[in-house]
Image 1: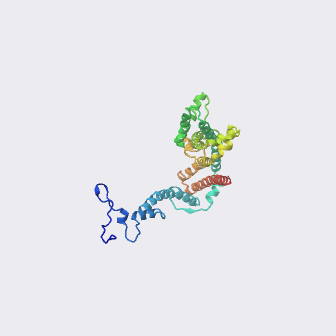
Image 2: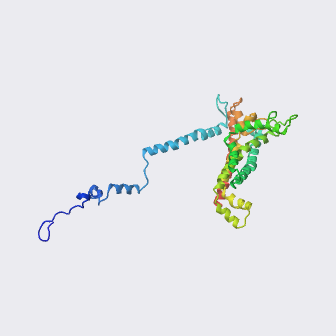
Image 3: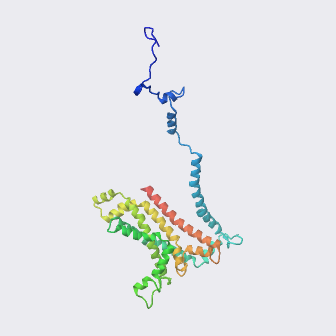
Length: 343
């Protein structure tokens, strides 16, 4: 460039930093490729990151395959595989060693018409369901409400009532033997009945009720914890609004608090049905599920792994138990879903 007088001008100097050293050019100006209008690779990568969905790499796909594939394979192999196999085997006659022969619905006809243990076992399972659903579950809800009020020593009560839940039903059965045994049981010792002690576990008219009490002891703690967690999640402003409107404590619970526990009610209902219909180990630990303690699960075990080895017939009993369980659970869930939609 030249000045108006024709003298050449020096090129414009870059701004200098401290000490007179020239400042470096901006990175965007030095590193920008020609024809990009000064866009940098950093801005391009940021725009790409803000753009479409991120593509999974091979490593991501491998991790997803492992995390999802293994549980699905275990579920199919342990749950659905034996279930479908039981349904198929229920139409066959097989002793586990010889050839499998197709008999159609003969196993179900024999089960309903010529197997005396079936109907008492089915009646006992329904009695379990009624006892746990109408007595143990409401009692667990009552305990949860009392503990939620913050009574004195509530932490101690909560821990004590929940303790049986960590025990298996087999262990509960052994404890029931220690309590209800005829000769050395704690209950007869407390009653001081030494001349003619009551055989709580040997009498078919009494043993089922004693076992139901032991099973309810464990089930009540489980229900209490579930409802206690639900009660802690209830908005306190709902109770305050009901109190301002003049509702009593009972009215507040049944009209305000209990309807908000609908998700917990669904869980408790399903668990109660499952616990009632899958009961096995507690009665098997007492007297192998005989003499008044017959259950469908015990009949399945006696026919499949017992001396008879009637796997096809035992599978038919298992299918009946599966259908009864699914009938209760599906009906309950459909009603709850319809009630949720109508709200």
